[in-house]
Image 1 (tube, rainbow, N blue to C red):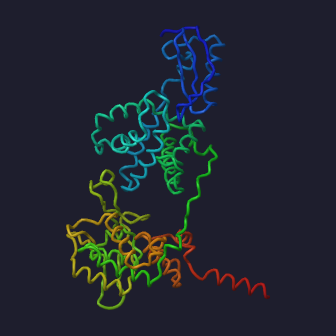
Image 2: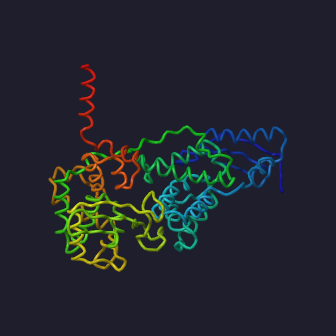
Length: 455
C-alpha cells in the first residue's frame, strides 16, 4: 500500500450544477487531488472533520483512495448494498405474493434505489435507471428481460453507486429515502396513498434486514416523519342510487358488437352482489345457484386480478387467486336478489360458459382487461347520466358499483355484521370506510341530542 503524510485540505464547495449530493469535500494526498460529494453540508463537514483529525493525529493516508488508514478499514464494504438487498427482498417475497403485490414492491423500489446512491460520475438518466430496475434488475433471474446493450452501463453504474444498506442507520439517509417516495417520477408531490404504499415497501424491506441481522433495528423508527394523510373513507359523491344504477346497467348491453352484452352480467354482479371486479372475473357456473324463482346464491371462491405478465405466476395477464384477505381455500356466500338471478340466467343462455366454467370472458375466451371494461363503463355513463353527472365523480369507476351496493345494504338497515360478511370486509373496516355513505345518522343523532336538551 502506498501511503503519505503530505495532506492538504480545501474549503467545502457547493456544486450548484447538481440537483443532489451537491457538497464537495476536496483535499490532496501526495499532491494528488481527491474529492467526495455529499447530499448535505452537515455530512460533508463531518467527513472533512474526520480527515482533519486523522491528519492531526499523525495518521498515514492511502495515496490511491485518499483516506487515512483508520478510515480506509471502515470504508470497506460491510454487508450488501441497498440494491443487492432490494433484489433479495423481491425474491424473498415473490413466491407467496400476489402479482399486484409484486408490482407494488418493485414500484416502490423504483423510487428508492436511484435515490440511495453515491455521487459517482456519469450518473444515468433516472428514466433509464427505472427501466433497468423494472424490467431486469428487480426481477427474479428467470423473469428478467434481456438487457439492451445501451442499458448495460446503466446497470453497472447502479451496482457501483448503490449505498451500503448499513448507511440507512444514518437518519439523514433515511430522510433521503422518505423524500424520494414522497415525490412522483416527474418531481411533483405524490398522492397520499402512493406515499403510504411506498413507505410500507421500505418498512417491510428494513424489517427483513433486521430479521437477517443486516441492521440492528429498523431505522424508520428513529425518524420523526409524518406521511401525508390518506383518505380512508368512500366519497359519497361516487355512490349511485338504485335508479341511477339501473339506468347505467341498462345502457351497457348496447355498447359495441358483443362487448357490452358480455359485460352486462359482470357489472350487475358488482352492483347486486358487491363483487370486486377480480371476483366477478373469476365467477364460474358452479359458483352460482340460480333458481327459477326467488333469491339465488353466489359462492365466491376465486378471483382473477389483472397484472402485467412479468408479475403473474401463469405468465398471463390474469392469475387465479384466493379471495382478498382470506385463506387460500376460503369462500364467501352472497345471497343475490331475483333481478341478478335473471341477468345471470340470460347471460349463460346467450353466451354459455368457458371450459373452466367462467361466466365473463371475451368472444375469444379471454378475461376482460381493466381497460376494456372501463371503456365500456365510461360509455355507459355518457349514455345514462346527464352531462353534469358525467363530469362529476358519480360512478366514475366500475368499482363504484360495489360501493353503491354496500352503501345500499347499510342504509336499508342490514346489520353491519351481515353486510361485512357478504362484502368480504371486517366490521370495523366496513364502518370506517363507508361511514360517510350511511344516510340518516345525522338526523337521528340531532333528534337524540334535542331530546336530551329538553329534559
